[in-house]
Length: 147
Image (cartoon, rainbow, N blue to C red; front, side, top):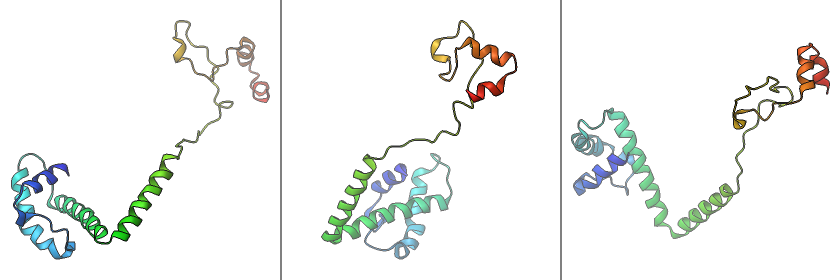
């Protein structure tokens, strides 16, 4: 998209997207003139389909057209700016966390790590209790789960 914006900025004024009009009013001009010039400028640098380029130009036009419409009405611009401020304020206080899909008691690592293993590689759920290990060896798993 950045490449398209750079190419558009270097084109003649007659080949610019008119943000004061709706897309449906400029679509024919874009397809016949602007897309051809962009295609010439991007030849060999990127592989893309005409529909992809059209979509990028539509999104660019929609963004600029919405900003243009908001700036026409100062009250609407104030409302939008205040709304964006409220959203940014709310987002800044959001704490993102991931729910764990397991319980440490059920998925406890009871195998002894190698003696030369660095400490940081040993699982925090590893139980270093020798009695615990001997109970597993003797087949008393029910007793361990009930502890």
